[in-house]
Amino acid sequence: MIANTILNQIGGRKFVVMTGAKDFIDLKNGLQFRLPSTPHYTRDGINSVRVTLEADDTYKVEFWKVRGINAKQVASVDQVYADNLQHIFSTYTGLATRL
Image (cartoon, rainbow, N blue to C red; front, side, top):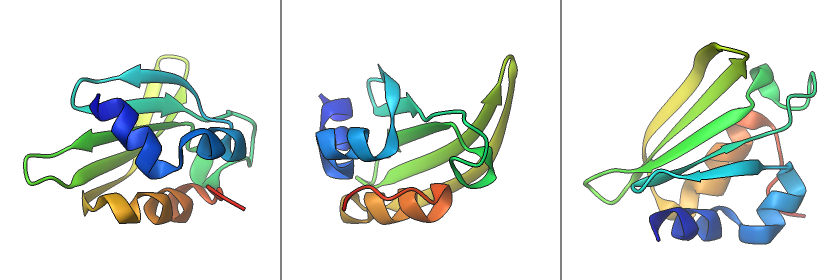
């Protein structure tokens, strides 16, 4: 339920088409997904994103670079309101979420 809400708030099907997002995982309190690992596709090689609902009804958005068994957190943003999810995503990945 929360994962579906997050996906809709970040742009739904249009977001998936525009970004190439895939491998969605329902985290019960959030959503995790992967982005294409093509070199230079995203800023700083980010290819995994985790959005978690916090107790104060804001989101924590984490950006990761995952290569094999190595995972490095590139950035983390707290206190993100739903209406700012697309902007934060675009700022950190360099990808547009809509036309």
